[in-house]
Image (cartoon, rainbow, N blue to C red):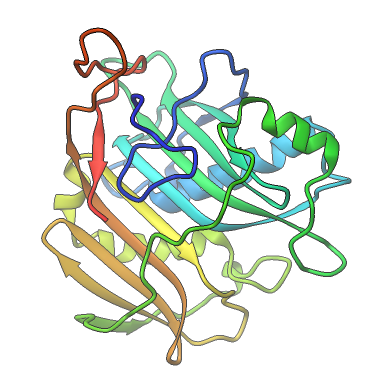
Length: 288
């Protein structure tokens, strides 16, 4: 997406690009009807499931399921440049662009294979934490996996910085979001895709945000578990939608969808003039 990027992602800057010498883990996926809306657009919860699956497959390909089997996501960023639609065939490329000893920022780029025109383009980033299966606490990434992940990382001292405010004051609507048995994962937590179900429920009212490029973010503060009575509080703005997932008065997760603006981002070089990135995407900026 250009060169004005940061290894520790910023709420208003493009995600880092794929290094030229990188060899990311690559797989393919066909968009199916179970993951699209009534306009055949690949929904955000469908994208979240793709990210979960490619992560599991990537660990298996690296023989790391025995040493680093359990990861939880603290933040997911989805930059929709051009939405994917049924029945497009997508290429997914996954690599680590920043990490520390216990967590990593993982990039996944989804683009259409043999597009008719520009084609779908979706960039994502996930802040993943390595969890000990015995203690349930963050644990050190195993040495072999760390070495593999760090090969193309811009930063090996990654720190957590929240992007979204947990302050739910000033919301304009609140409604129960009943949980289903199918929303619960093997650890009795609500699975990642369920939060995106909630985002999609309210994003359906905002076709203006879906018409152009947009960024969607979910940050997890505390788990939602089986039996919790979940409420979604929302605030609508001209160019954004904010959501707070609450249990009682406690905020468990925060989400935001914001329209992107096209900007000229200088690239280093003699001319100093912005140029398109190699995949044809425009330079974008998001409002915080």
